[in-house]
Length: 637
Image 1 (cartoon, rainbow, N blue to C red):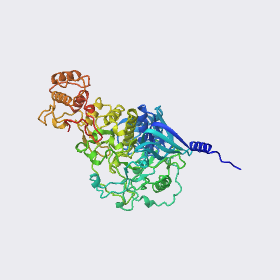
Image 2 (cartoon, one colour):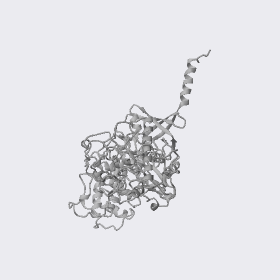
Image 3 (cartoon, rainbow, N blue to C red):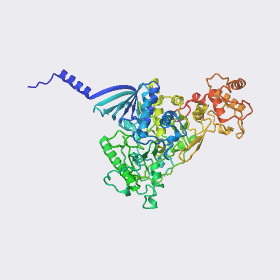
Image 4 (cartoon, rainbow, N blue to C red):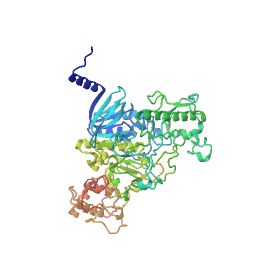
């Protein structure tokens, strides 16, 4: 007769069974998701000497720019910032330079998806403090009180549950799943214009998100090849009515006024490949996967794949592109399709601040000076995809926007601790998501999240307690922009000075909406009149009364001395002795890389920035909070 073990032995057996089906790991920073932003977050955190772990559901790094096949960068071509610049430089190295990757017309930088994955894996492999687990599917956040302390994953290779405990967690999932699991407040869908104050003609809030896409990468197998696939189920060519001017039943249905060849060349990649990510009656599809469980999401993915395969068959049969078929040397998948869909939108954090259109279109006149807190830059227009959902507003009225910077407070939950948010889940309005969602901006936002996370560990602080200037300083040292200046590249001799003075608000840029690459100009070589200076203190400053008169070097020195005195700047300059201060500046002028010191000559904007940077250092003397307010209590605007 079988005999049950004694009670203590039974407890031991149960414990051993539990241990065999689950495992606990520990790290300093846990990045949930190895996508575009998550990979950058992990690399940046590890570079700062912090033990960092990335848990990624697929077997690739890069998310939308590689695993989802969207391997054509949108935006930031003229702002080579941080890890995005490093990545692009490696793309250039692989293919032989910028001209070799300007193959399509949607972007300046096209590459094969597997190359993107390979580059990111090479970058990650250089970081000894970075550990990456692949095929780890997020299942649940681990929360203690109001603090996220880790996450549970399913190891899809073994089926085991894995717990990863961390001092700091970054939600870098595509849809914001960690914050949802942790109970961190977020938003989904469109806000009414009355709620945000954005003049975008959305009459009432709704739960509509942007269309998603299951991308296909086609390969040219030679003019003589016939690669036509079996006719997909439910195929009807009229599903794509209006995709180009050669297939349009009526002018009112024309979604994209291009011919079939130009439609194909939209995402032409190197080595005879084509990215099929066509928004105008192509393979966009409306499916809101955000509230779905894992099983439901798998089914939705199959629906999206089916539409893409119908579009591939349509291209092959309708326009004679029978020599094109799914590339056999891209993705490690049985169906040759990408590892994941392209999600344009997920949940959006309710953060310390909400980044809205007003902050982009007119950053210098808002009640919140969020531009002073920038940690990531972008220049792509606000671009929404809603053609596949007839319930969505089809004619949103957008502000023209210049280039912009994303505020640090958009990455930090308003009340919960232990969590930062990257990817598309940052605290922005639905409208602004239409530009912050693009690959370069997401990559740079991820880098900022990684830098912030590393500082939380180093300083034993929660994210909201890490100084804005500390994060910005770290990013600048990493070659990243904090201000979106089109005309001052990192190679400029005074890049750091101009970035820091720009972030102080003393000298402001001028925004310009411009086609598909918006701009903000600093105009470093132009002269200044007094009304262009925005002093951060109200009293005790020396400025000429004539606001239209050009500011001279002598007057700039007097202004700097008075500002240094007012701020009680702790530098080794004689701010309280204007004559001595002027002599100190004259002696240092050439050492700072400046030329032609003449008291009576009009000073340039770059020269004033350099003068303030080396003497007063308002970037550090004027710390800011997450809303961009100066934190010193006395005498501030």
